Image 1 (cartoon, rainbow, N blue to C red):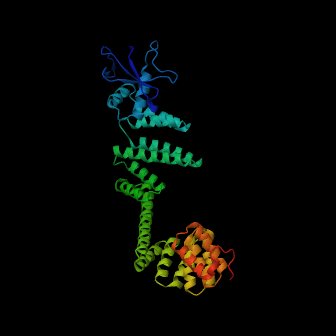
Image 2 (image 1 turned 60 degrees about the vertical axis):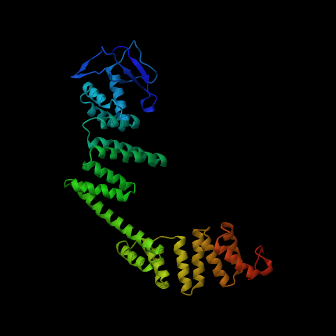
Image 3 (image 1 turned 90 degrees about the vertical axis):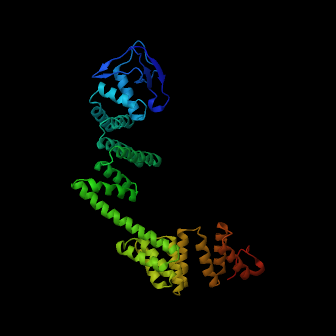
Length: 390
């Protein structure tokens, strides 16, 4: 091949690619395809060189390698259609060869080269769903390795690439049952449940009867029920925020029928009942949360309120002490317990809790109220007294 003008590409994926322009007089036919001198050709050069060696010339393999690299990383290149035609003329079975080589590279964990070969195969025609899924599997394998090594950022990076390549495939093949199912399942794995349900329902609309379809039908049924239950739970919570306890109680009763072992449902039930004044039944609901294995400060705080209203102040204090063990910097818990001690004239305990709350948020209204109460109790000794006589 004659000497040609050369231009080094400065982008990392094409760092070893040089674009050459052939002279007008040079035209060669490859299986019915004639070179176009107006189109620059990508040529891959060895890593240790910055230009083409005139003595060695340019081999067709170097042009084919350059086109593969451009197909992989620059599918929107202005000359991409020309490059596809030329590559297919040089290697008619190139797509299958790329796929076989990519799988081989993936098996030996040469992920970078495997990705390049898969991408190039995906950007050739005809495009098949299997090509995109194979590349998604490659990204999935890299994501798993990152997860095993506790590399969260790398895991996120590769899972996003996994999702993106499947979406790219769907843009080309929107009615592919394989791509629809894979996109749905990866979103389900990532916790994007509503997105997953949408894709899996699209899959079911076109998928033939088979074992895979049966499995996904069951997954869709379970997922639909879960999403519906979650929406009911969130709706009940919203009603509580709006002060509509009766409506919240109606919604959460429906949720508990479907998910009797979900502590969140029992918590909202107890919360609603407590605000409606049914403290004994509310207490039972909060105890059910504990029986189901959930132990958090909010549950114990609610139990404290209920037991206090039911006349057991000592148990109410105990519940608040447990809540503070779980959330020691919670000003609400500190002041609630302080006021209970104040009612029993246990001023040493009240004062200690006040100091802890004040250190966290001196401007909290409850903290200021505690200060006022302490001032009444202590008189001219002030809040700096080391010990308060009970």
